[in-house]
Image 1 (cartoon, one colour):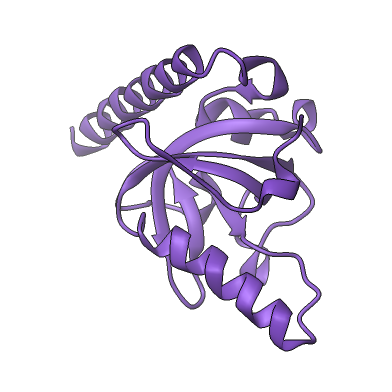
Image 2 (tube, rainbow, N blue to C red):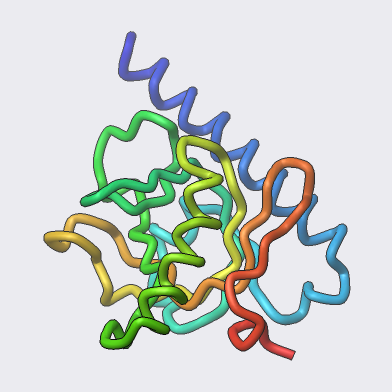
Length: 160
């Protein structure tokens, strides 16, 4: 019975996230053609369809030392139900690099433990820390909160 309850809960959360993604897409009509808005479930189930593409997905964000992820539910059953968040791909050599990375983490920390919608490129081969995740979001463009307010990670990553 508990297993059925968990499956129903996951389905309801996925429907909620899909609705949020559609809302964000509808309110940003000028941006709509740049990315594919889809559910986290769809992205995890068919990663080959979206590899290397700019996507918009919604989920629970976790920001931690060995867990940078976006998941279907707040409490995850498996890291395979989540995507790794690759906030910055480097380089990591200079003081300017450190400042750039710190600025991105500062934005992301605002969403720790909360639901957010992330616009980023999907990389199915990047499976994160110890290869535990089902792929990664990288080169973030924007991250949206529930009020449809968004934060830009780096103006250079937002496609024209």
